[in-house]
Length: 184
Ligand SMILES: [Zn+2]
Image 1 (cartoon, helix red, strand yellow):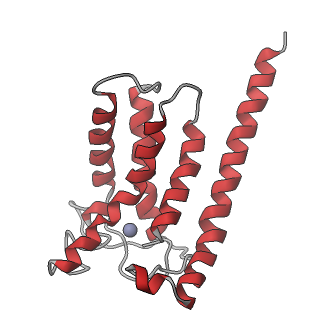
Image 2: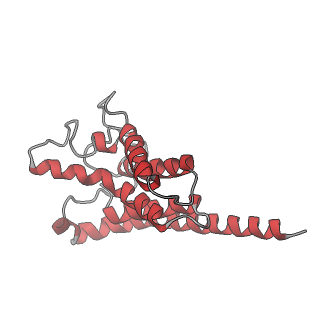
Image 3: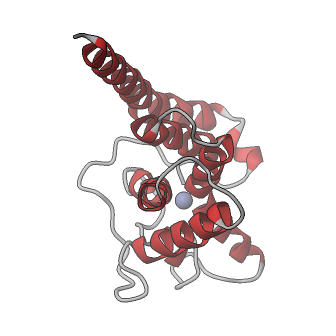
């Protein structure tokens, strides 16, 4: 995994692309949780599931099919009772992107097994051709170490900074559009 915090940060960057007035706050919270959700698979280690298994770490829960399923379920739950201020299709796309971003970031790390993007159809584990992010140790104890700091440093460069750039650009474009619309 990239660290959970960084998966959440990436979700903030994706949120910036979908940000518009009137969207309920729980939509953004749900998107952030969706971006972190795939790593629930580490629970499997405690039950003897091996890393490379279908349900192993970076297995099915990191696939595009899982992202689509989770986005559907969460979108359904969010819109079940009342309006959340965002079009259903847009909401689904947002949740899909937030969840799928997790696998792509993991596939940019330099360790562990790759990501089963096409599970359950193809269980092959993939990395992206470019893996600049140091892989995060699994578990808290490993995280607070020199290694953990190195991980955070690469995540800062490759996840946090691009997220900030994305968020500021989206904000700036929207502001420019709003100003242009206001002109006669
Ligand atoms: Zn992961």
